[in-house]
Image 1 (cartoon, rainbow, N blue to C red):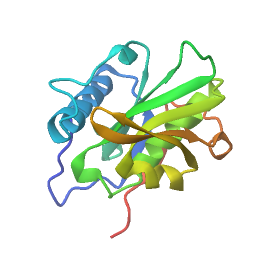
Image 2: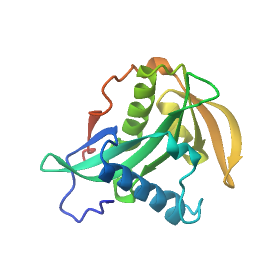
Image 3: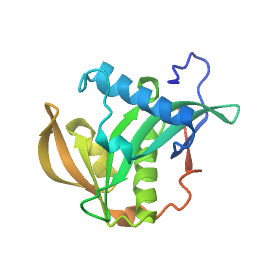
Image 4: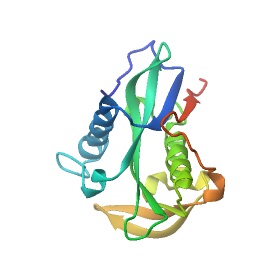
Length: 181
């Protein structure tokens, strides 16, 4: 389920981790459809592709009374079968009401790269939409080249693995807090 908060409720914190349950994986897929099909109109109907068959979904969970209640962010990672050690991140999405309220994008990127690093990643890449390049640069990523994908300008970017220590327990992930007003 994608959570649309009704004030005055706002989660005090979020857990970012591998999506391990079926409801988390289903909610990740629904959020991706909302962002990439409905909002951005990059895809028609669904954004799933062949990568989903072997990708690891990561979710950002909002909390209610300390328990996870909804997926409010997601990204997927996978190792390139033709280049062992090279990992990719893709389909980073945050639910509209939570954009800018917490470090969800940064947290999703942290879990993505650090968990791949723990699994033998020697190079982590992503195609990043042009408007998101400053966030990635602030998180120790370098733009390697500009590319057009799905009719939009993207940057092929590479993470500096030295900034992402290996995370050996991504099933539990990390906690991030809502920004102060």
